[in-house]
Picture 1 (tube, rainbow, N blue to C red):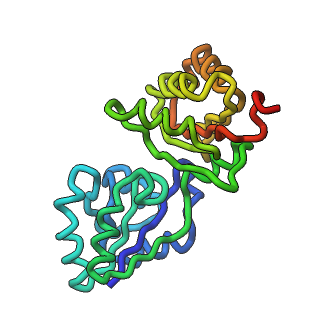
Picture 2 (tube, one colour):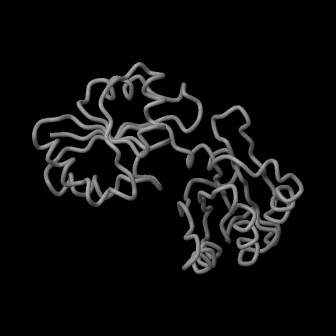
Length: 232
């Protein structure tokens, strides 16, 4: 009994491994976050494996059905719309239940937005904190306040329509001069990395609202970063 966690491209369709393509062709069933999005990718790769929807809204109820399929002998793969399943995407609950029920879990290496953004930032990444998405409302300020105290680099995901608000909240607790990098559209044609202080980056996005689009990763220096201006 086995389930495969298969990363899919975050933008550039060439960023899928040969192993991932083979597994997606060989399994009996693919669980997809959005079957319409995934079908486009699978059609591009010539993969005709049946798709089941497995997303945040049905994950709790779908797990028992998925386990029955696996325990019945079917080979199953889990994919998200983009990147590695379970990283700020559905997957954790299913993996946990598979482990509890003796199902072997194999996670293929592959695309993720976190690591490229972290390396591109130019900030220390020997140790870092990954926050994922901040809460939209309740608890958001508390989390930002906590992040501001971390001694090492931290990274988070943010949506385009909240990026300016996010940067302003970071300034409120980290200060205007904290070094940061905002990376957007990773692996795509218009990939960009905006480096500087939090104040300079938020000013850029306010002056260029047309740049506020695409998938975004925010990387911020830790409080104890030796490169911080206030410690020079």
